Image (cartoon, rainbow, N blue to C red; front, side, top):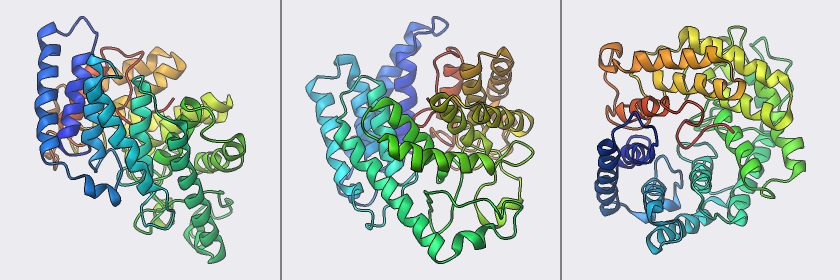
Length: 375
């Protein structure tokens, strides 16, 4: 889904289901045709053996399987084809249960990316067993506690925080790392993991206990809120980056943390999280016109979705106006990008993601960032 054909297919599937009357019916019908062509090509090259190492919807065969299930909805979620895709997805959960297997917890290559698939299916009316969801969330929580224990016992957390102004900030009950680094953003870090856990808590009652929510997840969210920089942005990771205010991306920076703060506000009712999101929105508005392309991960379309999510939460038309301004920028994406994305047609880096946002802005009340959005 991240850079491959299934991500482009996800856009076309989204286009085919768009109900906005501004889009010609033939365009939507063409979306169906393109989805099927791309799906068939993905399935021909899919290797399910790779699931033993990676079950993320972004970078594993779970992506094409998810697209297959979603594109089969037109025949009803109970049709044989759709059920087979879902069965293959659910059977892959066994690979994510062992906390010591080396699988990361983050979104792009890990357990959170698998949960993003299950959430997307649930939002499209598929019946997903709570037992499967809870088995993965339990693994993430156990892994986070285990990493936190190690960081505490060896003093690593204190060393990471020592040279920053946040040196006195207590260590959260959950710690996550990817390639031995504690990232904070949506792609590899705390923001993507915690946003997903909050969404699981809301969409799958019983999958996460109140104790886990109140003693593990929300305290870690609160810790994240206190890492916000005075500009409204967040650092990309712990360590030296705590003193840097550089990236305003979905993958690293405020753009990916805003959905977490909005979700925490909706679950707890605490306005401190809403304030964090609004301050983050100012950073995105000021610095979110990015030159790495107009994609979702580290491009201006991702910035636009963050502002749109603030609008959906607050109903303040200022944020809709700002999201529309980002959409205007993205309509001339070839002029406004100073370099071509590594995967120029892909969902997360390229044109498919840009178009996903531009189609989404036509329905500003309901449209969400694909796969990993807030509540």
